[in-house]
Length: 136
Image (cartoon, rainbow, N blue to C red; front, side, top):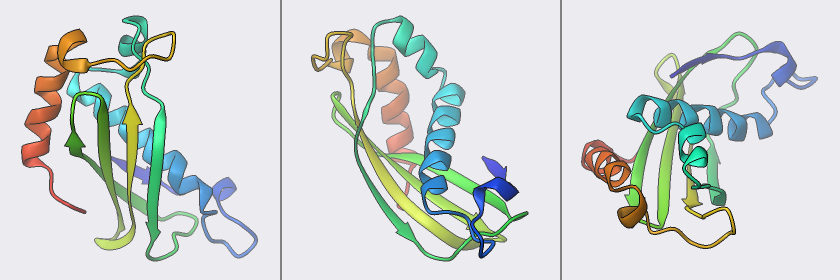
C-alpha cells in the first residue's frame, strides 16, 4: 500500500506525529483484509470482532510532509484465536518504521471465537499468507 504524508499529520517541526503511524498500521491492515477477501465489515456482519490486543512499534526515521510511504503488511503468526500482523514502512526504499499488532477474535458478547470452527476459509487464507510472509 502506498500513502502520501498529509500536512495535517505533521507537527511544528514538519515531522509526522508518532500516533499517525498507528493509524497507518490500521489502514494497511484493513486494506490487507480487503485484498484477502475478508473485509472487517463482512466479519463484523458475521458476528466476529477483532480488537487490538497489543502493539509494538519501532520508529526508525521520521517521515515528513509529502513523503510517499510504502507500507507492507503481512501475517507473522496465527493460532486461530490470536493473529499477529507485521508492518514495514519505507520512504524511497529506506526503512522508516516497523511494528507488529496482535488481535483477538471475539463474538458480539466478547467471548473468544475459534476461527477454525467459525470461518475456516479465513483461516486457510491467513495460513497461506504466513508461509509467504517474512519479518520486516
